[in-house]
Length: 442
DNA sequence: TCTGGGGTCCTAGGACCC
DNA sequence: TCTGGGGTCCTAGGACCC
Image (cartoon, rainbow, N blue to C red; front, side, top):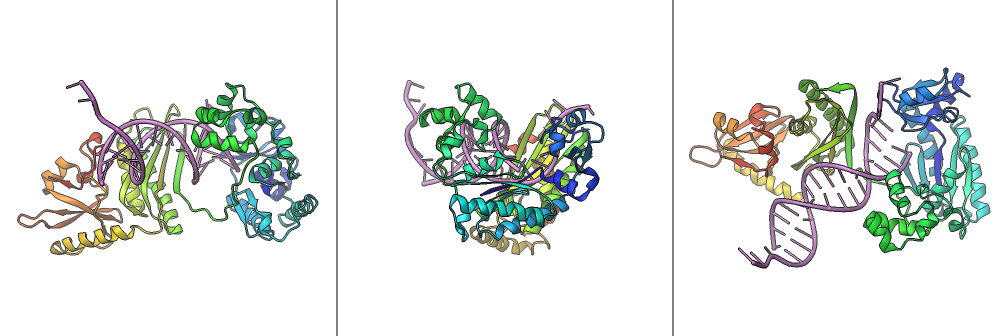
């Protein structure tokens, strides 16, 4: 079964505020650069749609339309009521988003005949309405995720669609290719140039042709889905692959100081989420959108995973230095991927121990600093060498970077700790640190 | 007053290693 | 006047989803 709440955010608002019932409601960004997250069915009658710029929705909708920025705590609360309801049906529930989930009914004790699941679905939608104080959902029940999802879209809102086994192709083939999740505007257009509009057209293409048109993964996947062949399981637990935060500014920003402040704020949000989930990330990505909406990303992979907001901010700040911001940025984002539950794996622990042994001659590492073999920073060679002499960057943490300098006669000289944004650690020029990272400078 | 924010997955090229 | 064949890791970008 696939279950999807109808116009979810707007429906919660209309439920909680009786004055909004029967009126067009838009939930989303209400600022100059906002987009629509959810349009109520009344607003859809005027052409308002999800992902449409709010300015466009304002043009289309009449006076009296409510534009709301959203109350996510309230949405999360209603969402968990629904998810709890689904958990009563089966232990196998896959929450896809705040308002959508798959349930493997075969994992519960149910009569799986068409009559049985029809009764089950009808009863579920009724109970959902009661428990949420009047929200409605649509559901599709079928022999696969593909057909269940298509079914849930078919009779929105508050509709139940059961696809009887054996009837899949009859339902699927006349529909446009975009009913298949994963076929968006670009794929639709590409397929159209080959005369493919419906799923039946798609099923007429050979595997070899589809792969040559859409690439291996997408082509092979659609070759199967076009035949309603879909054995994707309901996955109950999924591990996060990345954590990020981004912000579109009310007006484009050119001031470097302001951009750096934004990076720090974004990095703090990411850092807090890393800490609260107990995760560490090794690859840090900066995302920037220019005044003309062109978007670039720059990333840097550390020798060791971190959850330190100041370190994330320092790396992201360095990545920003390689970008041309003279015409202003409309968005900045900071993300962390390569997530792990620990800062370093077993092998790296051994290497760290070796580094710590070496450092004994120079005294213990400063509090809050984690030693590691691979350099997090490449030092600005000229600046660092001039001021401090040759050394290794060998530790970082809590917004600081530790450098072990070579002594006059022994390899292990004094240890000095720098703030992550110390100019001595800054690159001499972007091409310099974009080159092969090295741990040692002379 | 065009175009959010949080994600996932895939591809392709280059570096690097054996 | 020639220069392999895998495999992994990293980076950047694009498509897509809700």
